Image (cartoon, rainbow, N blue to C red):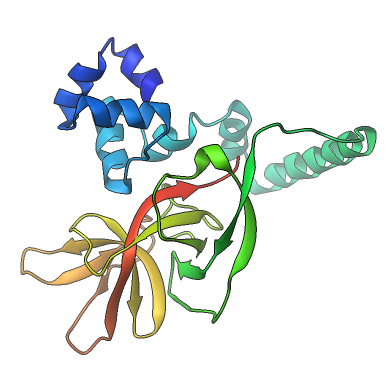
Length: 228
């Protein structure tokens, strides 16, 4: 998607690198897919091009989704019912579907809440088959998201590629354990110097941190995996 928006603006890699404060080499690796931008970098680039972060990551919202979002709830149910019927007929008529994209086996080691927090399941080690082309070159672990507090950037059931670190920069999205519960949130600091965890979904309040809390930084989110 980066290549698409860069060309629409008639920018060279050097020009874009200068605009967003990166090197030409970094831009080249992002476009080639050999390196993935971090969450905060995606947000910065999306802001520069005037698009939503999820659009920068996953492409434009489909026409059918735009129509569905405008319908009343009862009509949305009708759309789902009809679509399920069509899918069922299609699957009954197709013997097999071949996807030649290479997949690799990976393991989800933890669950993180995009909401009110979740307790870690011991020895989760859930096997998943992921598209190799969507996996970043470097990461330490994979976590699965439960909840919608980080929408629209991170959605329920998304997989997060995490770089293990005990320190996350301000305004970065990380995995934090607070009083035994795991969260995926953006780390923020207010004007009084107080630290808090911020949700991207405005329906959720900030989680302020105090000395009485048992807090551990697990890692920084470097990439989001979602199959559309």
